[in-house]
Image 1 (cartoon, one colour):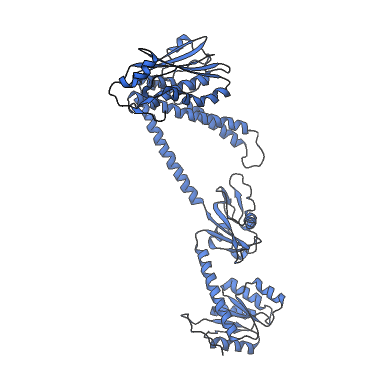
Image 2 (cartoon, rainbow, N blue to C red; image 1 turned 135 degrees about the vertical axis):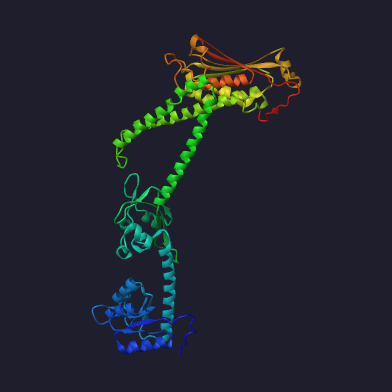
Length: 547
């Protein structure tokens, strides 16, 4: 005699018996009651089974497959599950393959062959109830999760939607079941308005998680399109085989709004920063400010015009088609204008701020010991490729045995780079660019080199940057160091830059207690700077260990 283990549940479980053979039904009822279960009713047909299940809401249904009437047990079990979510165990004397396959379609929680033994009945019931509890817990989690969840089988047919997925797609689970994912979860690329490829197939074939692009729109069954963010992952069974896929997605509308708000805040902060930088212009001399007031609007005007032309072209063309557009070159050209003018505007502001910082001595000089023969070639080396590209000839002539120079290396580097940039920008192809360095001072070079550090001897380094093929008219030479001044376009010097580069150079040279001069004739243009050794007896100097 089989004895049921002590009950572990706080309530008595109700089990509905559906059996058209009265004797078998009574025997099942007695067996269930002897096992501690309650049988609220016995139904002899499929229709009655649905009626009694609705009335008593049992915890489980024992269902005979072959019933009298128009509805058999399989159909009744399916309707009870869809309406009431009550699990079913089939009890039948038929075990042929066709009956079993048809019963499997309804995903029953058990299958018992007649004659029924109490032990087998108890095991089947407890197993079914445990499985039901686990599935209900999982279902509750999926229903309660804030994201939409869609589960498919390995053929891409939908088996489950949670409430969020139903709300977002506009499809109910009952009507979406066994439909393809692409039919229910219809997504398009937000930019091209073209359908997104069959990502589910890729997931099932590659057995990997796929995250969709950010710019994705979901087309629900009814209503307007929704921006979504989602991922699809494969589902594997205990044997590691692909059993289906799970899609998790969410409405990204709120996320988009937050991102746009963050971008707006960032733009506002950047605007405040730009305004603060522009306010620094008030510190310049009045004559520089008057010129700057004419110069500063130029770049933004060019940027605005280029953007407007871009907008006109884009409005006239459909960006969502798949055809190639003939305006790509035009768009690229105006986009280049936007970029170049933006860079020029930034350099203009930076140069103005640098000039003011130098004049007010915001940053003290950082005197270091500069080994010119080591420092200068390293500085010029990046310009060699530029010269080769523009078919220019670059020459460097450094006098031997130059003494170490005490000066501000950062300022000296900025001076040379500005002069070299001008030389390489305006020298025609085939012409020469030359940098020469020599020492000026009392005594010979050897004596200077040996005693300069020990005695703080005075001497001056002369650096000359010259280029051929370019001549600055005499009447213009005295003006080129003025802020915002550009040589008229009728001359060979090209327009461009901020008009402040040589102003920065002159300001830095004066801060280093040096001098700068320019000469120009048919042979070319020469910028000559004189940089004195700034060390005096007893002065502390930082040694540049990189030299």
